Image 1 (tube, rainbow, N blue to C red):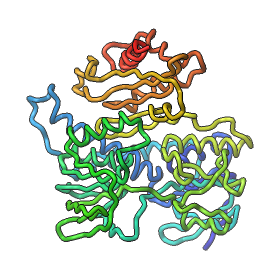
Image 2 (cartoon, rainbow, N blue to C red):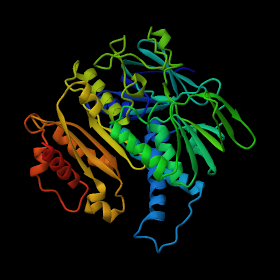
Image 3 (cartoon, rainbow, N blue to C red):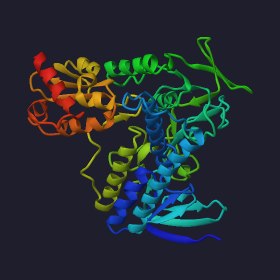
Image 4 (cartoon, rainbow, N blue to C red):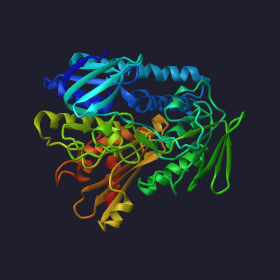
Length: 465
């Protein structure tokens, strides 16, 4: 039997984008419902993406560091089996779900389990796991259904031998060897994870170098550390021809004729927006070939009262940005306008070993734009804090204007790079003339800290002038 309910706003998806929109609307006194098709709230970010992958990365990194630390050489190393490792990851996920449930409960947001489908521009039908159907209507909708790993038709995924970035989190035992196809952020991160767990790793990159959008010096440093320091076998500029599953493992044949055999294949080459089966054809909304929905600057679709945020709209495909997009869409619904937008320079955090984080222009971009810049370096091997922690690989790199000293780009490679970057981000975002390297030159930093790298890099660059 169908039941009918009406809300001021209905949000499809409870990931970062959906959460941002729902809480914003609820804080304004709107009646809000969140539709979530999975058994627990949080979306792909909480259950298959950011949270579990970063928890796994942290655990693998700690295990690797404990084996190598010069301060812990007298302590016998311990082996953590696959079951215990993923149990620890699941504990983090469970805690995050409980936190988010509290957010919705305190803000009186109705969470409805089931799969949503538009009937018309103001009405959706939600089908629960037991196939019960209910109908809901709303003045406004926010589509925040996220994305999923792209699956080519000729790759025989089975969640055991051939997995993607979602199903890899369901491993029951470690493979002896792993091939990662795709060397984007996800591919590079998982290659580091499994190498830190002591597994032989092949990384197949479809491009000429790793993460080509990075500053070339940083990209080259990552390649060096993954190949020479960690022992990952990297194949650049390769594309697959076919994938075969055998009783003993997986055979990946490349178009160049190379053949790679391993126990498991992790496919990490692209993602697709979760736009199918939403009934968008009933609204005249047509996703692109990647399943993404086109929106305007206010995140409105071709229907002014239907918004879309997060991975479903494509770039920048970041959990942090999705949450802000959700808040901005909520603000536009409430006020009819939104003076806020995503920041001009969105920080990038890549949790490889070592970490990478960057913001602003690269040397290649500034050179193409004919901007006169200078470079300041701080190599972590020269910092006292790095010696104490045993994490002396990496550097902080500042790019700044030769005449105004304005900070143009910040690139960090090493332990805690994603955290270190935000110090520079705060100064870079200041209005002129407060956005220059002079801040770092004339500021007293705690000693010993990694933040001191900013003073060292700023002085290094200033001395070049």
